Amino acid sequence: MDSDLSTDDTSAASQGGQPKLFVPFILILVCALAIGFGIRYYKNRSKPTTEVAWEVYFSRVSTAPIGENDPYSLDKRLVARLGAAAVRVDAALYHLDSTPVADALIEAHNRGVKVRVVTEADNVDEQEIERLQEAGIRVADDGNNEGYMHHKFIVIDERYVWTGSYNITYNGAYRNNNNVILIDSVPLAYNFTQEFRDLLLNAQDSKSADTFIAYPKITLMDGMQVFTYFSPGSDTISPLLREIKSAEKSIHFMAFSFTHDRLGNAMQDRFKSGVDVRGVFEARQVDQYSEYEKLEAAGLPVIKDRNSGAMHHKVIVIDGETVITGSYNFSKNAEKRNNENLLIIRGNRDIAAAYLAEFEKITR
Image (tube, rainbow, N blue to C red; front, side):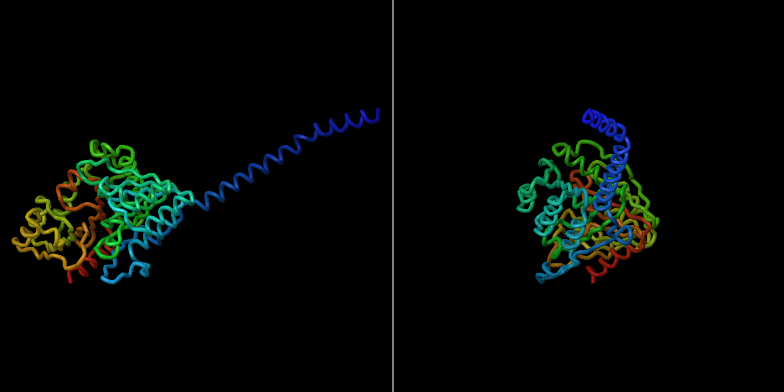
């Protein structure tokens, strides 16, 4: 009897005390989960990797094999950026045969970063591309379209955009004159991410539809404006002509390939109006289609580059404050056939000064 009463009392005590113990347990569990998610977010969130909203880099051209030791080379800078990636890397790359960059992409993939790559169909058999695929990274090509998948851009953590003329190769970093601009802007990253997704999801027919750009004009905190264009889906020739025609004092250009008659004619018109127009052409691209001889015959101070590698820039600087850059050569193919990106950057004299310094170095 005492045993029965003891059992009943214990059961009653247990039933009466359950809510008091259960509620604190749930609170503790919820707090623990919240702290866990908070730590995970803090560790994975995209932290600022620049003191300003942009950085400009140029290849450090040399005849010496300095690639192993130069911490400021384009490939070393890119490896550092990829090493800081926390969530996602989307890379649209015409060429990728840099082992250090491929290693960095594989390392990012192995630590849980979602890495995706789109490349030109002609280059999909490159050794480093095959290494990415073997590591489990998703790689797509442009499906042997008529034009080239000529982009050289990377979007990191849907926040940082890396773009310019730099193909991810040893020559691109150490033999050829190239430029890269890195911009910290979520809206700009969104534009490039959408272009990447279009390439990835519609590889066989990526040129058939017009390009929708969610944020065609972006204003950064310092007042700098960035206008985004993608060919062949966007109208790229009209904004280029508009910028050239707006020049009041000077136009400086560095052109790997410059064959577009309308752009050449616009340059001549500004020169005749008293604007200081000068440029440098990649010597090996000066042929019967090039604008070089026409501009030279019109009296413009244009020169051929003297680099033993390629002068691979696609840059125009207007009035010392507007910069046009990207993967876009000044040609009909870039306008009508190839997948290209073109940025027009207004209102930042520091960026313009960096590109003008590169111009002066190449033309000395």
